[in-house]
Length: 279
Ligand code: GLU
Image (cartoon, rainbow, N blue to C red):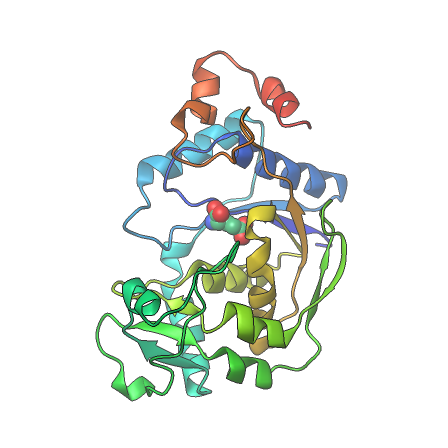
């Protein structure tokens, strides 16, 4: 298959018209390319994911007229694969256990960066800890300086979205300085972080183009790095504009009033939704 894309919502709340835009755009691109559109459920946050939101995703997307192959990949069924990937990174000395809370990180005097995707850059408090010292509930962090040192340079990805189209060389200095040692396995639950699970699944599902909102553009460089660590080629990326409400605010899951289900209940048609998002 020459073109494979995906829509990868988290079943933690209702889909809104911003999600509809993302799903329709990916579906339309796949159709135009004679390729495939996949649906993936990103439910690694097991505390917040709910079966009723999963069902609502199927209902909303089917109502919009989208089709996708079954079975749908559900990330909560794939934890063994993510754990194996983390073990492989640990065997190469690229991850370490970390017990720091967010408050500990802020108390270390790290200022959250303006517009940073990840919040404050981790100050490295636990970086010298060995995996053999891992306590229950510890997070696992990527040692990013080591990771970039053992990645074949140069890293880059291709973007086709309207705002940032073109080749994007990745500055490894920038990754070390501004992204830092990100969490790959979450504190407390041990659940895999979005950046890891999503990048691994893009490879696992042979995605050739990731279509998603420009709000997650900042995760791309580190996802390309993670893929490179496993010897995987990155897909291309199409980061689309965000659908905003009348006041210019980005729609969020908690804005139930703007959920697709509400529009449906108010008598809107799938065609109305396409028109509202400019498709
Ligand atoms: N589960 C992520 C979200 O809902 C997907 C982001 C992506 O497509 O990579 O924002």
